[in-house]
Image 1 (spheres, rainbow, N blue to C red):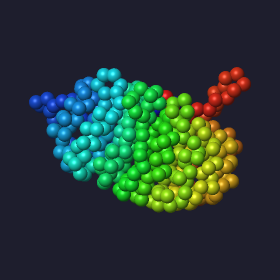
Image 2 (image 1 turned 120 degrees about the horizontal axis):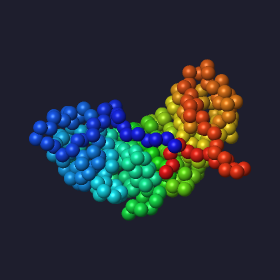
Image 3 (image 1 turned 180 degrees about the horizontal axis):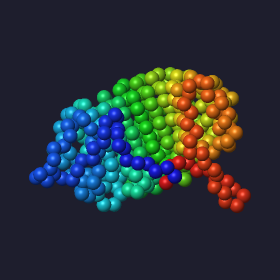
Image 4 (image 1 turned 90 degrees about the vertical axis):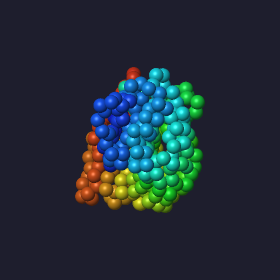
Amino acid sequence: MTIVDHFETFHGLPVFTLPELPEPDEEALPAAGDVAWRLDCYAAGEIPFAELWRSFTDRVSSAQVRALVIGPWWDDEYTDLRPALELIVADAERFPALRALFLADVTGEECEISWLQLTDVTPVLERFPLLEELGVRGGDSQGVGEEPLRLRPVRHDALRVLRFESGGLPGQVVRSVGACELPALERLELWLGVSHYGGDTTVADLAPLLVQGRFPALRHLGVQNSEVQDEIAAALAPAPVVAQLESLSLSMGTLTDTGAEALLLGQPLKHLKRLDLHHHFLSESMADRIRAVFDSTGTEVDLSDHRTPDSWGDQEWRYVAVSE
């Protein structure tokens, strides 16, 4: 199981966690635009998010904030993200310089990724038209929140990076991504997860993403952390979108020789600068074949984190990097 760590940098800026409520001798905070501000209700002394948000907007020049990272937003029991997100969206006009937002920078020690109770994140894109990067972690596969992670199709002219990290990404989110108009999108990363934790995305749901020119600026595509990684590899092997990419990631999932063979028999991939297959179940002979294909092309191939299936009797079980 891959451990998801807190960000040290985000959007090219060092992450700074807002300290506890100010004391009379509090040291000067960094300049508002020099760091990515991280809000964490635990680090701030287990206070409600509304109080932490007020403290943040009182102490920091919000007009200069360029990047914002939301850590644990609950002060006692796990609660859904909607009230916190509503505060952020309501104050959108106070953050004209905001270009990057990450929702739920939370580790497994604080809350399992599949327990994170999210909400419809579409208002972020609607209220921050200049946002360039949006990341979301979680999915609420347990169904304990008022609503699960959702996205509605939108047009957004500035978004360059979109990343969903999940142990079970709802197919509805993937379909909505495919229906969005994102002319500036350069990087798209989807952690699909497993069905047991709500990951009901099918290969058919991915079809709109595989058409060349759907996102004309796209240069990196990651379809990762999936229990059907072989099927995804087979779908990507002939996909027109691959021709416009500089990097492709099929990492963190259950990729076997079957999926790797499909990639090798599909369209040439030698134009890629990077092919990321880490956390895989390939045989050594197949890994050697892949290395041989790309040895002379300059393509960086990541075949690290080789895994072997778990055995239960006469059954083998392959697992993704991040699920619960």
